[in-house]
Image (tube, rainbow, N blue to C red):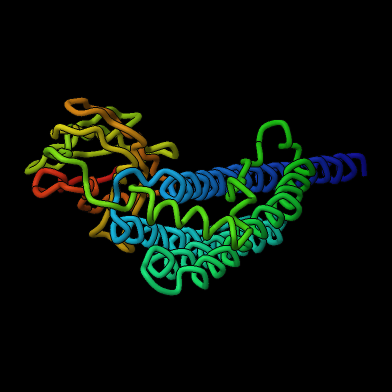
Length: 332
């Protein structure tokens, strides 16, 4: 009887230890899932914040861009915003973050639709007829951005913070900040009409200043690995959560240039990844580097093509040296 009792006791202890071990593994896996999701959300939010800076940078400081170029550049953000929505929908997440996931998708959908609406109405607002109506519509689409900011603050932040706190990760995981609309004046139709009117008639949308205009692509470096991309040769790039591209822009003309979009596209393995940043100013003869973070995780183990392109500036006639194409493979 004593031996049987001892055996039963040992069995109970082993069972308890197994239960604790399984629970520990599950808790560890759940916490890692939280960390992965927060990292992915941070990448989405940072790129959305970047789109805000670029969009309103173009609308408030268009430089010497023509009306056609300005409208085209704003329209370029429409596809990027749509990609953010698709990526947000595809993110894996723990069940405790279901609400946060739904709210994040809604936030990005509001921003996508707002950018699409602004891009659609901007050519008319910058044109010769129907400017007032188009400006009023742009002001309405700006409400999408305000609504997205309110939804993010009131719904997304607590839906991320509370489950993380419950998992004991509140001190480790930080909810990223996001505020898309930069100035509430954009909600007023009269203010929008005035600001677009100044772009249209204030010289910013006029012809380029005299002299040679031109930019060129310099070196492209991948961080944090430090690999320099070269045309005609393939390079292995170690994938990491904080990948970015340092793109050197050279002003090869006789004029200072402003608000120059720089785009990086990764294609050839699944859906293309497109990220973009903007160089605010560069002086004639100067070189500057634009850092472009890669928010999405690139495909690994498959050859891809990395295309880096600098948008032409007003008056630029030769765009041959504004673009580079590089072969690469992202590794684990």
